Image (cartoon, rainbow, N blue to C red; front, top):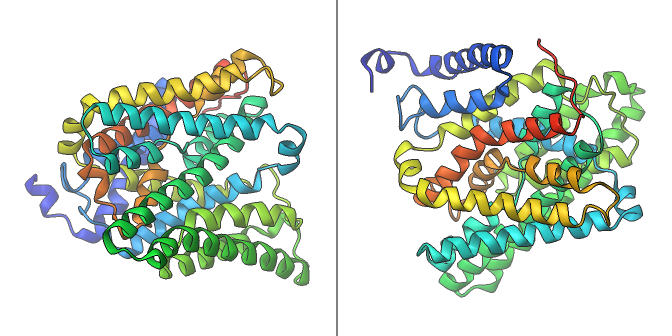
Length: 395
């Protein structure tokens, strides 16, 4: 650790890192169109506790809660933008999402097993490779002002992948608990109880907050504060109960839309608050990865990354025609689904049976998280640009 870094007051670390990340991200975005969140991740990794050590190696509970709130805002928007009527009109979308997730799980599991990992670690790697991080894709969409068929499919597939990943991951953790303790109740409480109760909390808030807005006669243009406060309270509740803020945020967004909450396009990213929390989130996620784990896992992470991209793109491309789009756009959707990292870090934070340290205990996972944190947003931006759905701006 450098002496000048060691001399800095701990309370100054996070604000200083966020300012540095913001300044460098803005510059790189203007000169090279590198997505801002890739730079946020790079700064978080370099200045993390295991590298230069400006940030603490283990974040406080308050920092973890703030990261979950930041992620929750983006998940709320993702849930809000889901159009369930679209799935009814085009059930091929559900089939594509399920097959793509299954192909990813199986492909990554086989690669990890062939590399010598045990069954438990290979399964964990497979399930954590399923999700596409909604936080990342939404920030890229906002940054490029993208809209169109590829964007909508990307958002919907991302939301479904999150659900599949949480269900699969909690099931595997529950199975491991059952093997070690022999208690079926403990196993079920980790999987079914966590997901069902979290969904119930999201449902309650999705009903109560719109009802309160109608009672107070608030208009859609001034509903942001109530929605954010509802999310903060919901996330705080599930965090205290060791439930899933991922599930509660998605369900909250879905139900809020169904109950008549209307968010204009200028409100969807929650303005400056949303940008600030997103900056913190991606710095936080990358700061938890250690360079030793990344180096140790790089050789396995690269083939896993390739298999994951191939599995996703193969399914979205091969079934594109049946689902009402071109093969080219199907391939671009698959390529745009590359990001995973923020979702993985926070899912592990919400799983005390394994803990966030697991990301560095499985080196390939650490390397995969970092690579996709840096490369994923770039692939998403390029895919949306090639699809002709971006309206780039410099701000």
